[in-house]
Image (cartoon, rainbow, N blue to C red; front, side, top):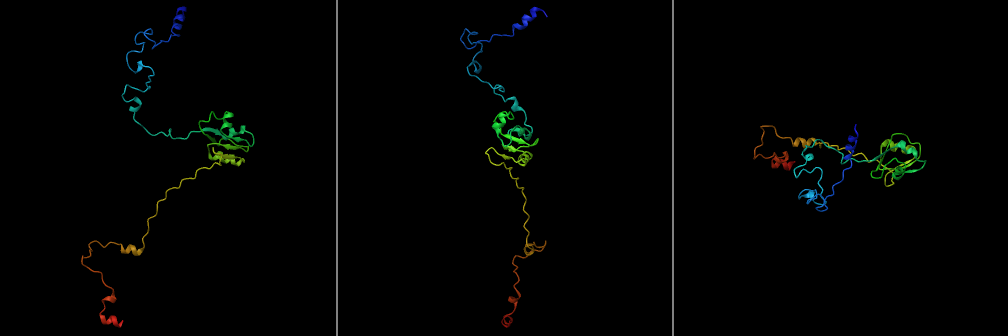
Length: 208
């Protein structure tokens, strides 16, 4: 390419910034900001999705499915094999993991996973453990503690709902509650029969 091309390509590389809002000396009466409005004033901020007052594009899209991203528990992950860097009997907490470069910061709690093996007795302090990691730490003679320094315990499984069985009625109650056969209706004025003793004449009652 020619030398002129090299000069012209570099000409627009360092463009001087326009100095706005410093009186009429800077780009005329409106100082390069146009006429009145929010963009012509100091401290203006317009969010990227703003469309002049109409509904933004991302709100016009339909909602599909469900995401658990806002509700999930996030952790810094450390495997059991990474704990081999620490000495026998050491206390491995988040500060020690940060010092060793296993965890970037303390913004999230630490979760210990069971990839690898533990050959040392360690006191591990973390927010959560997988069941395999907890088993390997305890089998090596160490202890697994939560953030408060207490022995870590997995939550108890929830009880499953067992529906109650239907109440069984006795035979007598079932027979008494049995409805009359279809077509057999008791007359309105019918009385219940009296016991045999009450139906006997007066003389028989005295003899008895």
